Length: 401
Ligand SMILES: [Zn+2]
Ligand SMILES: [Zn+2]
Image (cartoon, rainbow, N blue to C red):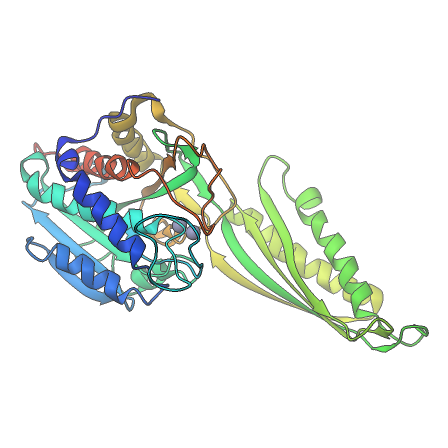
């Protein structure tokens, strides 16, 4: 494992940061319900000289720390925004830890408890380190990353304005990478995550007498097979995309030809152009299949999170910061077709989303995946993440500016 270089101010705060994480882990709240979480965050920073906006997007917090009027030299002015998501998942925790969730059926199974703790530690360290940076840093605690896109509402309610953010950084603890590694990469790092529903309407009848019917189950089966041609035949094979049907419902009994079938699925792509290809081919296949079999097929395609795109220049900043902390442990992130609402912030201002290897040595990468009921991570990653944030601020807001 590479030697880690934890910032001394973070090393001093590490016990406190771990205690924060355990508090949030024990008291998880679902998206847009992070009321106690926000209260606790505000309580921890109440002694500090911060401008606080709360609530933003129902439960979100925007805290601004000013330290002189130095601009952000790398981006030509403005402040730096650091972001954490606060929400938990509707999962009953099964793991055996002393900080187990006390809220039935709710669990921090993605590591957002860690993200809040990292950002809280970063705020406190930056307050102590006012002689090491100059300018303005904005701390964004956003609700509802898991599906509802809290980031979109934060943007709409002006989280990035007054003062305007010139750059934004976020990070994710990442059990798909071993502890001690940090994944940083320019360009797309998480996918556009869309969902769609298809309603197939035919004409029911007797299972023994298909004449005169339009079998909705048969038509749906054709669709399931044809849709796989989008990725294999329409997308550039060097690019990534996936179309998955996750749910089919329809039919009445073994001897009745179904008149209706509903299909639900998800479509993922790294590039906006591939997303558009998937969307238009889905529509084309639905229309063509309807015409071929005499059924009526309606497609309801709902755009989810956009692709998460890291800006090349801000990725360089993140790389320099990450290397100061983890040296040779910095490399390509473990990529997936998952989605992340950090994408909405990155659409507005250049920035970088960073992956912190957090698998415990005894588990190894990916053995305890995110969103599983016994999810846990190596808590040493909290000091790593906060150190990376500190180094990013020192890179972009140096005292000499
Ligand atoms: Zn998640
Ligand atoms: Zn997450």
